Every structure is written in structure tokens, then in C-alpha cells.
Length: 134
Image (cartoon, rainbow, N blue to C red; front, side, top):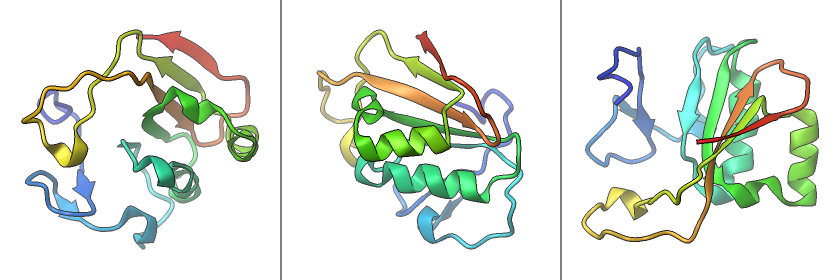
């Protein structure tokens, strides 16, 4: 959808699911840094902190890291330290439940009891997050 709207997008995944420009492990990626582009992803939940940390470590100042994660990501003592070090600039809470498909399999229509948010960091931002609803 981003490409259809004219955005310059380089899309990747760890495995080939039929979409993407390249396939590699983002956490082990070794490109030229600082990266002068925004990062938008739906990371594996158990590696979300690593994705956030790695994104912010490799990005140039002012670029955005955008993660699609459960609202429960706000909880936890370990993540509190992450949020204190790297406060998100915005958290957009989905006011309706979003459907996530396992490994891109859209053959089964499922409902979701889970609330998801878009967490948005801007490299270098220091301040209080703004919470909004979609």
C-alpha cells in the first residue's frame, strides 16, 4: 500500500513469503550506518525489544522507527527501562480489534481479542509520549 501511494519503500523479510525486495535477518543485518530511512515493521513479539533497540542504534538522527505491537507491550519493568531510554514520540491505539495472520496465511478469517498499537519513535526524541486513537 505504501508503494501504491508513492512512498520509496524497501521491503524485507527473514524468509520469502512472496513479497519483498530482499530477505535477511534484520537483527544480524550489517549495512552502512547510520541508516537514513524510516523503519516500519510488525516484529516477532518476543524479539520486539531487540528490533526497537537495533533500529534506533542504526538509524540517523530524526528518522522514525514504527512498530505494530500489542498494547501489553507498554507493561513490564524491563520495557520500562527501554521506554525511559527511548521514549516513543507517539502511541496510536487501535480503537477496533485488528486481525493478524500467522505467517501471512489469510485463508482463515479470524477475530481477535487483542488490542494493537502503532508505537512510533523518532531517533533523538526526548519527551513525553503522545497517545492517540485510530
